[in-house]
Amino acid sequence: MADEPPASPAASDTTHPDILLRFRDLAHRYEGILCDIWGVVHNGVRSWPDACEALCSFRKEGGRVVLITNAPRPASPVRDMLDRLEVPRDAYDAIVTSGDLTRSMLEQRPGRKVFQLGPDRDQGVLDGLVMPVVRAAEAELVVNTGLIDDTTETPDDYAGMLSDFRAREIEMICANPDLVVERGDKLIYCAGALADAYEQLGGTVLWAGKPHPPIYDLAMEKLAVAAGKPVDRSRVIAIGDSLRTDLAGAKRAGVDAVFVASGIHGNELIREDVLDLPELEQSFRQAGVWPRAVMARLVW
Image 1: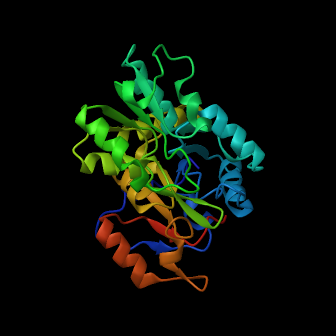
Image 2 (image 1 turned 60 degrees about the horizontal axis):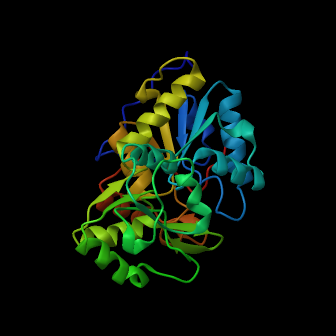
């Protein structure tokens, strides 16, 4: 792939994206992929074989793949989940998570009394850190990994808790900036929805993960290690299903993007298995982001 002509600059606000049936028609322009996981590679219940094949094929042709996710956990448990969902390890070179960034932020605040707002499965984000874990009423810092029971609760259920944090001027680290995510055929609220509500109250939120630049900087470092050399951002493409995180993050990072329309926006943008092109254009225009290309699903 190193002998291919350089890719075009990251798509501008006036670019009309290509509609792709197969990623291989575009892949030769790039040396590296920064690929979202949830909504592109799997939906939390099952993986998508076509997407896995696309990433494996890209790597077989010399490309490198870093999975970049807003999962509020370190990379190791994310890898374990991918194994359970039968995502082949040949599909990627490295994983970068918002949980990794969260731990880095916490390490810069040693000794603070921290409350983890979220389900027990996310407690690993605090493992090994030198800081006391306390109840909400005693917190000096909140690590927001999501709703405690995301199957039944909504952000409204946390209005009282968030108001109390705001009254005490408690800083919040949001370990997953996603507002919602697919789980099977349902959309569930994520930590980003709680963080948005806290900001609306005037609370201070530190955002880990997409669309913020630090996670892309870390992903580019991992990509350089995998490639054995620095990779120019003009030769990197991000793949994702979220306008707010994946496309906005790619724009801020200065890389091209492929938008996968069947993810969290699928009900809005796909009608009877056909892309709704006017709705797509309106969505991109409203969000102020224009991908290099659009696919219904990631297919090689």
